[in-house]
Length: 295
Length: 237
Ligand SMILES: Nc1ncnc2c1ncn2[C@@H]1O[C@H](COP(=O)(O)OP(=O)(O)OP(=O)(O)O)[C@@H](O)[C@H]1O
Ligand SMILES: [Mg+2]
Image (tube, rainbow over all chains, first blue to last red; front, side, top):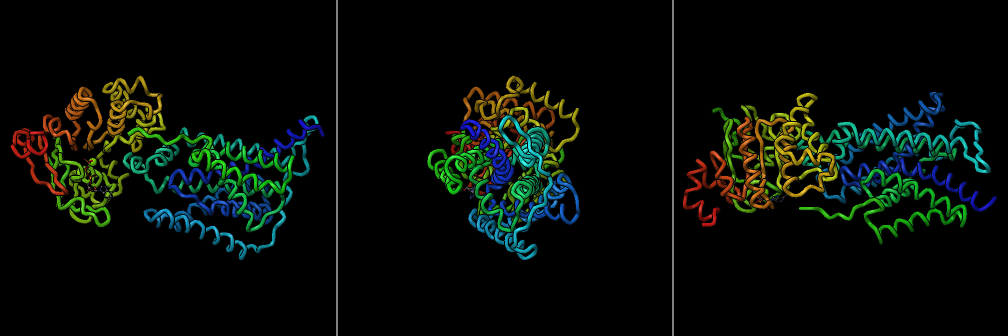
């Protein structure tokens, strides 16, 4: 293949992978925005989402779209439950306590999953058949198209919710200044619950899509993508929604380029090198403003 | 005139810090009452407790005969108490219009909201010109107007104002205070916290003086403005 073609092909792969990172990163960034917590259990929520989708398809025999919906609902409720049981009691505790709790929740989800669904990887059922689209010499397979299509639809819905609805405005207000939002009549507990539901549901979609893309899921599958999505959120500017999307896509593309042109063994190293570079040179991220508040 | 807000011997703590030490005060329907005092006296703490952002350890707060002490902030605003917090606290990353919409968060009457939005724009024409602008880019005076407009959007019976003159030029302070008087004339009761005691006493009916968590003086605003103690401590001679 010619260089430019190979470049295009890697871009397509990168954007697919990046969409997955973006979906997970959105949850990180939304949750950070509202309670200033790096939810280290978020990658495991994504894993649970993948399993719910898996069981919906294999046990309930539904097709991919109902499976996605079921997974979003169940995983969304799980996210809400985690917040209510583990994080809410610590709302006024020092930041470090809640961070450690998040790590505890992460281990809990990983090892409880191992207990209930066994540590053995499962083969995710084929849902797209072997469709592939050829554009010139480029190949876009059905899974990639599914990932892109669903990601775009979810972004549009999310943007609508956050920008236009009353609940979305309440979310933005509470992220910016929780106390003042409460003075407006916003129930912070409700908004926080809602944020966990949305963030977890998006991660669930990512989990199912990864199952579809890579065909294999296991109880520890959330660790690496969880970290990568965290890098993506930081790269875009933690707390900033468009930042999470762009951060995810940029990270996906860089990883694909590194695997395609250098070696896939450097893929993870590249992601974490980005984290270090961002933290060194622009800790507020690509979209972050240098905080310079008017008093 | 009936009593609107009655605070009865409340104590408020920040951890071990005893910020409000058994204060009692009263605001009657239709009044402008001012609470003055030096830095750290506990003025903001008092307002934040009324609004439900802080819980008093003991004592009573009743509003229109209903006990509201310890209720969460998002419910207090539904009772009819709205606050313009210290430092304005506008939602800087949202537009002027969105800030005002958030002010009406508790309401569902679209027509009423629209009418009140127009009322706010009549009162603060500069906000209408800038309604699509990001609120954080407004000048200090405009931000104060936005914070006041936002608080009015919930159609409060009682408006709590925490240092509306802070950081504003004298001309603008005068403008803001005349707007406060005007808001009061159109039927909103006002509890005004100020360090600018001169201005506050000039528009208030009654006043309380707060010193390190205790009320040390109270009474008719004009009489307090004339009193030797107050002149010495708060009016610069
Ligand atoms: N979050 C807090 N944690 C601990 N102490 C606090 C906190 N907020 C206020 N205080 C203390 O409570 C006391 C009263 O503070 P408050 O903000 O009510 O004063 P104020 O009268 O509004 O002052 P200013 O005119 O400067 O706004 C002060 O001693 C202050 O240091
Ligand atoms: Mg104060």
